[in-house]
Image (cartoon, rainbow over all chains, first blue to last red; front, side, top):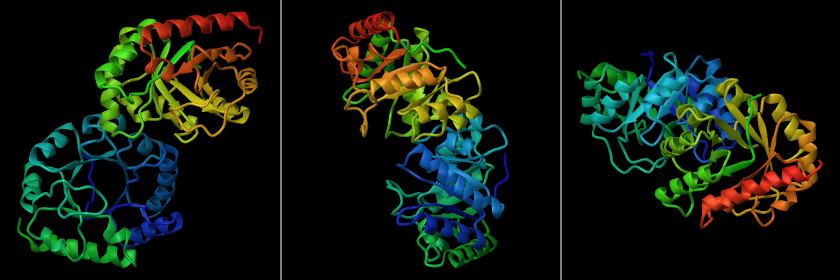
Length: 214
Length: 214
């Protein structure tokens, strides 16, 4: 199992950004304290995805933050990213693990305890659990209850990051869960000041972890 | 360089097919004489692409025909395909070669002599050159002249397959080119009798190769 700090997990979204403002936002998030960054780009060409990954990796490398590639194991290999994140419609975790080898991070989305167990058995290093709230960046068909997140966290011995519509205003929902970290898209990508947004999210996530007893 | 028989190159298209009729068509093409099959699926999920690749590979393995995966190196690795085909908006040939190693087939699309040289230098085993004619399966912005195909074939020491709108009725355009083979989508995928279509295309391609002097 590869150790991974999920405290503040940025998932990128380049929608409504120029390339310049996109890369600037990612860098500000890194300065502000993101502990891990996932590049998530849907719909473009493979070459565009690779080129964007190479540019983002220059930034994350500078701040010694692991870069995770959403879905595309070939892109992760091509840019020597730290790992991949696979959802239920991406390649199964077992394939990702086999193609990436033991030293890369493989994260998986799990909405239920059975999905979490399956991902863990197949070699996942961490789980993304959600959606906690409705979100504009994905079509969410079903929300995950905070209690389910905690049940997942107590079932598998790997860290769990909560995802889906989370922001500074509603993240207290994680107070009574066992989440190791918070994953955000819009709360940073659409923030006026992404650096401050990252700082505040991280600070409060650490407070929530320290306060709770679960 | 990995040897590859391009005589009759089937590029799949599952549009307007049920899964059953799609797999049946691919199998009939294999029986009819396809020498190589490329699975090309755009727009679906990675998991769907993998599942389809695994099913098609069962067929191509049965007939000892190499299976090439369009664009997705991770899918090719996951299903242990014979190789990949990359276009100008996919990963560069150099990346495909590095990720797949020396023993897998890497094919590349080239519309011009400079593109052909670049692909060869980066490690391509063969080139797909076209579009020779307008086609309904891709947005074609520019056609490739038969003379350009021949120039490409005489510039790089790897085989060339002609692609783009080709069928039994218009393939005589290849008579005065140096094409090693013909690539088709609709001429087989939409044929009423894909086995006979494959047989006729292959037979005539061999005749064209034998007749010409280029």
